[in-house]
Amino acid sequence: MEKEKQGETQNVQTQVEEVITEQKNAKEGLSESEEKGKKKDSKKETKRTEVKEQRTIARKRDKALLAALFVFVIVMAGIAALGLLLIHPPKENTQGQADCEQVRVSGKLPGRVVRFYVKEGDYVHKGDTLVAISSKTADAALYKAKSAQRVAASTAQKVEKGTREEIKNSANSVVAQAKAAQDIARKTYQRVENLYNEGVMTEQKRDEAKAAYDAATAAVSAAESQAQLAQNGAQQEDKAASHGMEDVARATVMEVESVLEDQILLAPCDGEVSEIYPHEGELVALGTPIMTLSKTQDMWVAFSVREEMLSKLPMDTVLTVTIPALNNKEAKMKVYYIHDMGSYAVWNATKAYGQYDSKTFAVKARPVEHIEGFRPGMSVLLPE
Image (cartoon, rainbow, N blue to C red; front, side):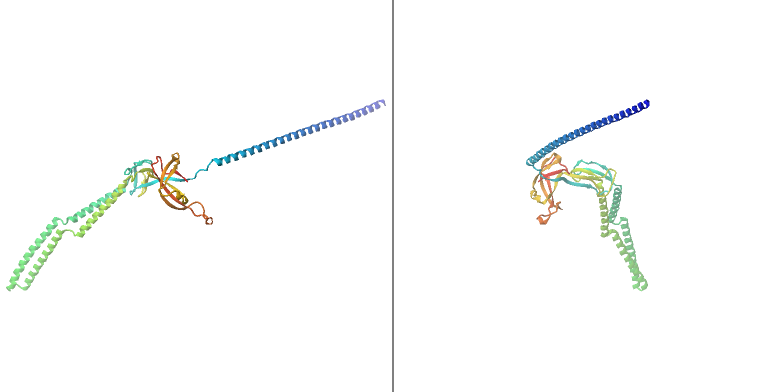
């Protein structure tokens, strides 16, 4: 019994100890959770403080930026106002372009380019040799024309000279023969006539003798006519026709030779070879441009101006212009040409506002003095 009581007592003590232990553990858990909560609250408070400080710093920075921006705007406004007071707007310029007369060199001879005696950029004088062109067809045409001329000249010479001497001599011989026959026929007729009068010869015989005599006389007349024809030669109309054919043949030769003159093309004027079109060995047709000569010694400048500016640019006015390509060199130019271009300015006029369509005029001016280095295509500025 005692052992049982002792066992129960131990069990009760054990249970009491477990309860006490559980209570202690519960108290310890509560204290740990409280400590964790406190720590969390302290962290939240720290974060709130940091956020407030950051907001304060951001506000200060924004205020500083606004102040700096305000100061920058004031400074820029002051600079702009100062610029408006000190800087004047640039003057408007009318732009023109330099130009010169150009001559296209071409020939009447179709053929092949054999050789160029000049190159682009060379300055040539009037009469200088520029290019050689060869044409076998033209050479053959010249040979044919000269042959026809020789034939026509021979024919005209033959007609002009008249009948050959042999033919003339033969005609004279025929006349002499006809006269001899006439003389015999005349004598025979006289004898028969005498016998007829004496009653010895019949009338029939007399008529036959008379007919033979008349025939001989006619033969003499015909022979004399033929001899005269041989002596006179061709008629005046035939001579004129032969001379006309000779002139036609001579003109044909001259025409072909004039074409062949363009086998060698010469410079028609002084100028600079600005452009060469074909190459050596290429074929060129009739009238095809071979090269272009620019008369750089005769330069001018063309301006396109509105008509309201014409009052400042009358004829013979001397202008002061600027050439940008020559380091803004100033030069004097004289107006010599004013003409309506037939086009309108790029703006629409409204008559309700009292405006009008402003036309554009071409104004040309030549340099008063030679400008070194001035070339076609350069821009020229005219201050308005």
